[in-house]
Amino acid sequence: MQLIALSPWDLSLAALLVLLLALLSWALRLGVEKRVLIAALRSILQLSLIGFLLEALFRQTHFLWIGLMVSVMVSVAGWEVRARQQRAYLGFWGYGIGTFSLFLSSFSVLLLSLNLIIGVQPWYRPQYLIPLLGMLLGNTMNGIAITLDQLTRQAWEGRGRIEARLLLGDSWKLAIAEMQRDALRSGLIPIVNAMAAAGLVSLPGMMTGQILAGSPPLEAAKYQLLIMFLISAATGLGSMLAVWLGARRLFDERQRLRLDRLHPRR
Image (cartoon, rainbow, N blue to C red; front, side, top):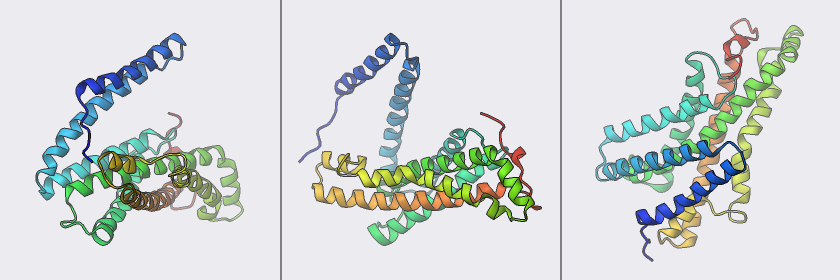
């Protein structure tokens, strides 16, 4: 089965639905019409640009160009993690914790899948590396952002409880352990829900794309299972690393709670 190509006219018809949504928002005074239109324009520009870049990148496998693309993807994802927190860490830590956790978890899981599971040669072949990394980063980014946001919010609101436990002789690890567990649970909820609903409530994006491209549904299901397992592992590992680094940053070398290292309010 051959993939049916979409013309600019086809996309224009679909864009009319977004315009209709913006008009309804204006008529009902919801106040989100500007955000809807800006988001749609950003999608057009960003996806068109990445489409042209990937076409050029797929025609060759030069490691330096692929490395540059990966660096940009990780950097932007790390910035998004920081932007989604109400009480982000001040200074470099606000960017560094999320970016380091993203890179270490997503890239380690990616290397494992490319070398041992899929067996791509060379392992940095862009047709596999870039799409897989994009899916891993997108989902891991959400998990880490939720985890860190929950951790810092609970630490700020429960500072009295943490300091009381420190006064009673608990270490910083024990004083914030329950908040770490709550933050981790929150960060893992999206991927757990996605796995539980896959196939019954929704067809995930990669499986849908492969079916539309003509792949056998069973083969598409296999790849989707692989991706979901990889995403869950990367999200879990990244969230665990981020919550440990984030919790450690909240205390100094004398195990005193240092909420002055957080942004007061964003």
